Length: 266
Image (cartoon, rainbow, N blue to C red; front, top):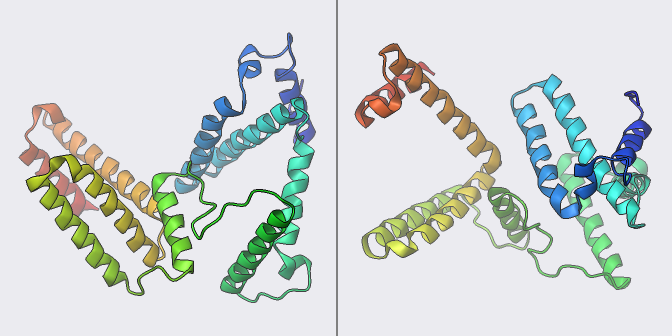
């Protein structure tokens, strides 16, 4: 079987991999639950390629992510639930329905107007589902997937709460809350260390809230800080190696001084 730019070839390959007796034993053993972690991993690798601005790698990672969609669709087809074509039809239908300012007679002249229109359409979709007896999550915070990364889920929960008025109007008020959470951690360390970890969760949640008020994505911010930490720690290792040493052979004071040098160099 030869490669192709046509999606049909990818569907044929996936079908061959899942064909009993002649297919791949590993692929045949999989189900939705076992493949789901790979789907999440591939999505993260796409984000990583974008963060590194590596377009060649992005091409490969998008292919890996597309394979996940094809894999899930093939397993669904085997159960007579739906096929890949149904997935395509569902998303094209949704895109047309949610962009009446492009494909219909609605008007939205700026991103905020588009966002308001989008929310109105999603609300209408929920009403239609309820009218047809389909289960619809209730409450202002409904619809935020539990499987999201913790920082992203916190961000989305806070954004939904903000839509119904449960929010601060000033980032400085959030900063005050962060200081309050830090004080509670300190108090827990002094009096109740068993609860200190839970207080750290509150601090992280408040930090996400501050990022949201500053129109920043907390996942992106933490990835950037982690990359900065890696970069500076690598500089420490190089400096120590030049002295014939490794981190485990050095004192914290020595490494901290090299950290400050790496920070100045940036």
